[in-house]
Image 1 (cartoon, rainbow, N blue to C red):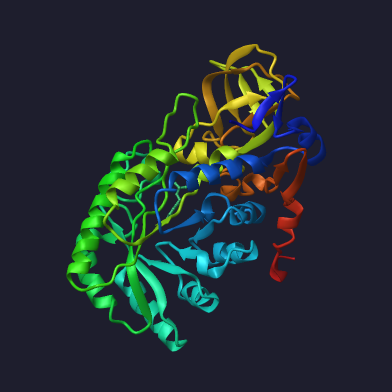
Image 2: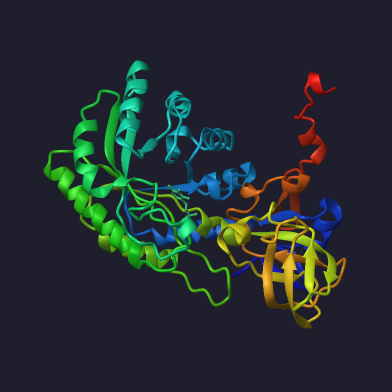
Length: 419
Ligand SMILES: *Cc1c(COP(=O)(O)O)cnc(C)c1O
């Protein structure tokens, strides 16, 4: 079921016509569907229903909007954060600190301190020295920091190289064959409660097979750690489940994922932790845009839209695919390129693709834009920062306002010696 549908020939999000949002808020604008977020959250939880002890933390970096975080908190999700800013957002959205997991390869000392001060649920350590520093900071406060070691299982996730994190050559995690020795040295530290391991091998995974291989390696490590007398009570299995961007995509379902996890972790006897991002939010949002011009091209016509790579970076960054659809499709199609106004040749959303026939002034959407969309937006070319709207039934609210080029300019100044 989808909550982005044609009603009387016109695209709606739930019961709100996108044309109404365009008229009242302007374009470009991200539009999210509450019902779709809720459905994805429930499908994910249902997929894990067979697991007894579990903790699900939404990967905030996928969509850090406060309203989205609150919506997911209401669905029982904690937060997986990768910076002090994301931690502050999770708390501001009402997620209890104890439900927050702090991941990330470059936490600053100030961020570790911030996590200790608010009492987050878990730190996922990326290297031995980080554990030593965290222990010292925690001990100085009279605390013991709950922590796991994030391991790099050296598994090829089979995804785009820029979103792969679990190969030996990637910067993430510590080599799994060194994990036992590092665990031996960190476990006795007075400021740490080193209680398990974590793994996350990449994003937009199209197959369960690499995940299963990674989890099996983690299972071997858990047995080895216990064999050495360590207590292992928590294993964080990360995120990474792929989503369909094209109608022909067929990623594994949360139910298939849950069944695999159940099988692989049957005798682990731990609390399992999950950090889904994309699978919850990608298809809960679209980027609504207006066609500025249809420009004749050397090969195909160029549909120049008012959204650009600064609003949605995924295509320029990862060669990602986003469906392009007219808000009021006539049924006619043409082969065209779709591009934004930014002065970069990589500011192209589609090339030589058969799309709905559009003309200047028409509204259109780029689908599947709810993950790694607005959060990666910038103001490049001095464009305003793109706003976000959340729809709920027949209502909507602007949940992040458009930040104008003037507001950003107000933070700049020309030094006295130049005046
Ligand atoms: C990015 C990230 C996630 C979420 O990945 P998705 O592919 O969006 O599910 C989870 N855990 C960690 C550590 C991450 O860096």
